[in-house]
Length: 241
Image 1: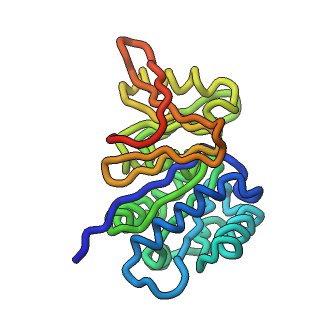
Image 2: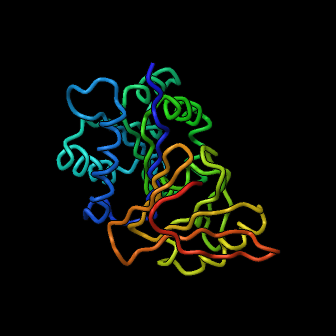
Image 3: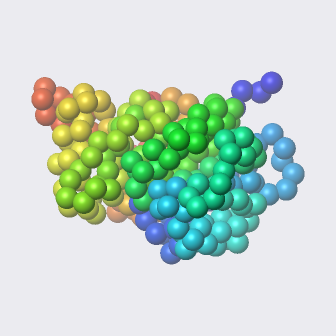
């Protein structure tokens, strides 16, 4: 059996419904198409809106972009207000060629995922070649640690899925206080972090990365622990993790 790549697209922010990230979204669909075994029909895209508590407007936005503009066969995994069995959730996740996770509250999402074993299902299909993607909370969830502002008045370190042994921060240059707070996370956990501006994406394929942008002025940074401080280095192009 052909070995499939393990691919993640983590997008630092941007308005999906305004097509701000469309060049990145196109690359996500292209990667999913290249990975799938059965090439007939449309790419099957699953939207997981848990972080927004399954917000209906967000779900409609995803349909607008991925079903009507990018011509995918779409489905949505609802976890709020709907009785779901773990077996049904597993079947829905196994159905797709790509997963797209929306933004919102990272800690609430991780709690809900662990309750329904979504985390285990996602890890299994990712290892089998299903492309993982997401924006904001949907970007940081794939990493070991994330910085969250879900709780008003304080920054929170969240333990996420750990597919990638790094920390991740989004909206890096657009939200006040994020740089200082993420520096603190990196120093405290003694872990390298990737910091992403809005409209910037890190695509991770196995042990390599590539920086993608839908805005030339957006930037990504490696943030590293260095003798009790945090060092920041602008990153572009591609390289090894």
